[in-house]
Amino acid sequence: MSGGNNDVIVVGGGVIGLTTAVTLAESGHRVGLWTRDPVTRTTSAVAGALVWPYRIEPAERVGGWLERSLGRYEQLALNSAETGVRGVAGLMTDTPLDSLGSWASRVRGLREARADELPDGFGQGLRATVPLVDMPVHLRYLEERLRAAGGTVERRTVVGFEEPSREAPVVVDCTGLGARELVPDASVYPVRGQVVIVENPGIDEWFVSAIPGSTDTTYVMPQPYGVLLGGTAADHSWDPRPDPAMARAIVERCARIRPALAGARVVEHRVGLRPARPRVRLEAVRLPGGGRLVHNYGHGGAGVTVAWGCAEEAARLATA
Picture 1 (tube, rainbow, N blue to C red):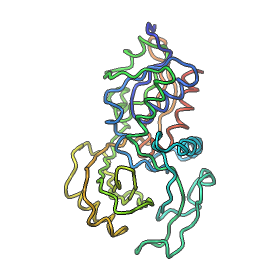
Picture 2: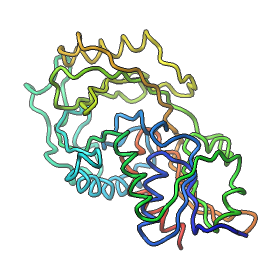
Picture 3: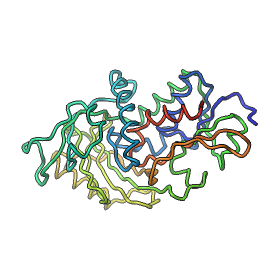
Picture 4: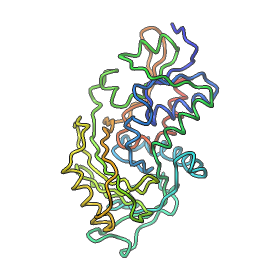
């Protein structure tokens, strides 16, 4: 039995939790967001944040979530200074056009790259203009938007869902990697990502080369705060500390693609643990006390990419 002032409590302050809370609050529900960490210190804040699917399943559902999210981000990009969302052109290598889902028809300027547009050593790639998100700015924007819609944000650490269910009849679980212990769900595991931020030597396009199954990826994301260079994808690694040798290797890989990066001054090192799962869990269950619990976690490396589509589905499940 709930005894609080909220209709819904969303647990988790990353991009999935914030977007879900905003969606619910703007639909007229009284929403409280509980987050263990400040929103700008969540895993989401470390993301390269290119709107493109990466390390996420099931493919047959991801496309729909992505299409709905893409439309939202394109609208947000009209006010990039406030939202942190920009439409940026770039190159995705080793990704045949016919390997993409129906969502690809929504991507601006998507086409096969010409041979003269490919860096040395690459035989195929796609050019496109897609949303690229400055995550610290975007997370603050979402938090402010939630408050403007009447929602509240509290720093609270929970050890189970009984606590929020005593304060609201519906709880939405957007705890990411935390679901491993909270649910508990042993199928959730970390995919460690390390990135390096350098001063921008004049790069204005993104570049991604992510070979499936490889622990090393190469990506260059020009952001307002510098260029975010990546990266790594180490399954089941919990180490939050930047590895100096990995950082050097990241810069070297990126400099082979964009030689101007070789001498760029390093501003910051970041590590994030992507909340991976064989499939995203997005479903409603009953709590022992009769409340409703909606799970929305396991988005791997594509939380930003599918955030709005998943939020809309989670909101429907929360209010059904």
